[in-house]
Length: 235
Image (cartoon, rainbow, N blue to C red; front, side, top):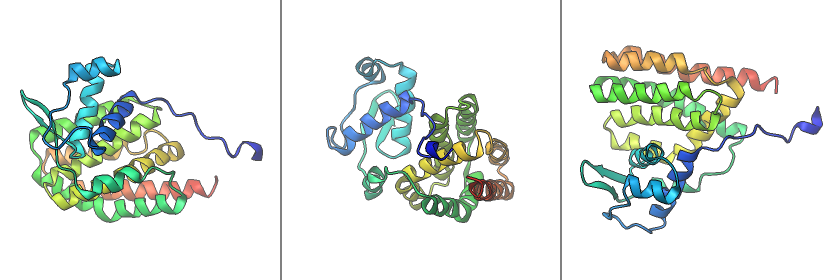
C-alpha cells in the first residue's frame, strides 16, 4: 500500500471558480481600474462560453470579497482593494497539518462570536441567502472542491452580516487558507459532517437567537477539529 501514498483524490473541475479566478486576477492586475464597469453577465457568459448563472455566481463571489460593487440596474464596478486581497492572492500552496490545525483553532476562537453577532444583525434577505448557499452545498454532494467553495461562502456570509469591517478584512485575508482547510476536512471527514450545524445556525439566525447561534458554531468548529485529529491518527 505504501506505493500509493503519493496519490491524491481526483478534483472535479469547478467552472464557477475558474470564471471567478480569471475575473479576480484581471482586477488585481489592474486590467480594470477602480470605478470601472466590467462586462455584463451576458457579455461575460459569451466570452467564457458558460451560462449566465455561472457568471452570476462568480460575480457574487467577487462582491463577497469586496472586489466589485454591484449596482442595481447599472452593472458591476471595480472597488478599491485593501492589502488583505493581495495577501490572500499569494496564499495558494497546499497547507500542511500544522497550518490546518491553526486555521481550525482560529475557527474555534472566533467563529462562535461572529455567528452570535450575525444572528443579532440578521435581516430576512440574510436568512434567504444562507439557506440558498446551504441548499446548493447539500446538492453538490461529493464534489468536494465546489462544496468547499460554498461552505466558505456560508461562513463569509455570516462574517458580512456582522457589519464589522475588521471581521470582513480578516476573512478576506484568510479566504484561501479557509477554503483549503474546508476542502481537507471534506476529503478527510466526509461530505455531510457539518450540515446539521449549518441548519442549526440558519434556524438561530432566523430567530435572532444569538446564544443558539454561538452554541451551534462552537459545536461545529470543535467537532470538526476533534474529528480531524481523531482520523489523522489512523492515516
